[in-house]
Length: 346
Length: 260
Image (cartoon, rainbow over all chains, first blue to last red; front, side, top):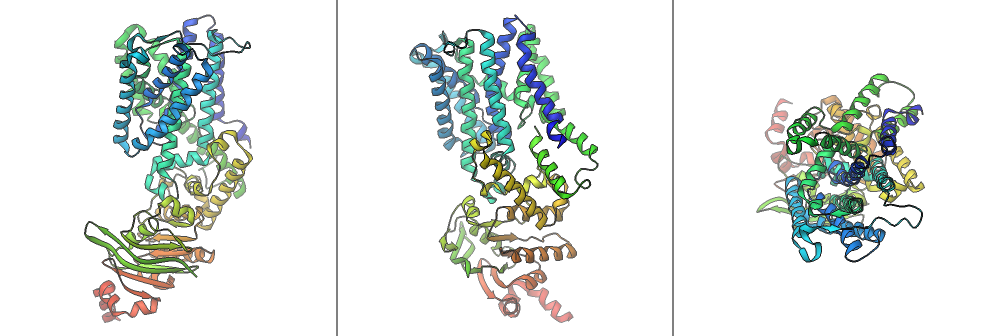
């Protein structure tokens, strides 16, 4: 089918992937820009986690920055105070945030909607307080310095910023692919069913509680992985890496990019970070400019940039094929068309 | 053969006996209707059978297995599906995606299968699409599959909710007022659909207000009033039962008698 090899969505994915791959080359030599890109990519991985729990499952978790911080500090502390290598430390960060999300989800997900948001915000704040106050372990405000780079085993040198960038990008692609695969499958349908109506989801045999808990654990795992990479990218980390502000920044990234979409997290993260950098000279006043831009986006494109483009493409396509489903082709032909439509919305 | 066996089932909401000591046998391959005036406890009974409410007394056995108080995701897996009185759909999703959601309970592939695109996952996705399409064909709405559920006519939405329930491959389908709000003509179409479902091997439990529909469809009728059984039997027995006439048909019936 021609639509499956070439569609606007595929083109969009390709363009975003190419831009990310080529960005460091075209911006050659500008170490600062490369650093911003790499940090942005680690945030984007965490935003993919937020997309799983908020975008697909419809639960606003405000503990996300906290779990990111747990990942940051596990890798940070293990590779410095305990002299572990990077990779096992990252593995510990992933396992701890996965288990932490699953176990805390048992309690957190007993609450619904705004109560879940408030509960998780409190969780996030507690994590931040522990990290910023438990001096004997986390060094509180002095932070952690000298976080190790990943070991390249003689093949790669991750102290080279560009190599580090491509490593983070690889994880970012993985996160995007997982999102794509989840959305395309029965698991995605399960989560979206829960988002739309928990009662109806229950009535068609979905174990709402367990699936919400798994989605929450998956989201905190992404946050932990992203945090672990962030620690290595930065080399020096402080308690601000676990702050509530970070949670709200990630929330902004995903709202701008598009909730529940495959490209939304990466597009939103880089666009907002670019705006942050662009208005950097205004310091705190930059929010005077950014605020209205984001409000306008939420009003005029509530499904975010990617959601808006998807709807636009969908409209064009249904006009192109002539009143959508009513006409065109024998039934088998149309059914496979629908199948690719279902799969291809980003 | 008795598919579902209910004994002494009760549900009390802080003193109110919504369902009180109800016995019911639903025979396989038949249509069993539950009727009664508003607030008689019909929907509550359905909610108890499907696991939405936990009974305060009594037992529910399905295929000789005790399912009393079992949560809905497990009763659906065992083969009980239900629809709601007010049409309940995933409104922003297409008709096909709605029905595909019903396949979740019959799917076994995990998130890892989805990420790795294992043969099992691809096989299952293909099977799910086939089954969903079959459910759409069966309910006669396959031409609407690409449309957003909230944008199709009400009658189609009601058919979608039945297709969604059928996609879970139930042995017992509980329909809560499937024809509410439909025209006389559309109701006729629904009665035919229900007959088709039974002919296809699915047992149907039906809560319905329209007496004509119930009388023509049901093999067995249970009449509830204030949560209690007041009569049970074939349409003929129930129709002539004086208690039923008083409680349910009441003045309406007498008027009809008088007119006729």
